[in-house]
Length: 142
Image (cartoon, helix red, strand yellow):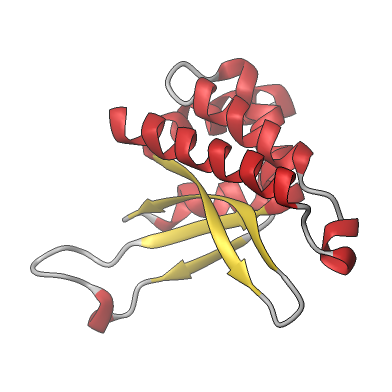
């Protein structure tokens, strides 16, 4: 299978099963936000394929984490630049998460490595929070 076919498959799987969110990160020197994407799925093979294509990690729920009579799920997650790269590749093939993916890419483009050293300017923090709120709003519509 060509890489294009693999990415289009991944986009379809992610479009239906995936999540995009912005998480707050607290560090002794700064407080910031970062992009995180992933998929929770019972079968391990598709999430392992996502890891092969885009990096990240795959973790299986422990028995203690499973609620009720549900089956343990496998979670693929990746973040920041890696997540943005995955979204860029999948975006042309998305039908459902295309708007939230575009906002996530805007968010990631706003984040700069220099902010880790110097702190995030207040104006940029407001912009990042606005993008986070809009992503949460769009996610609630799904």
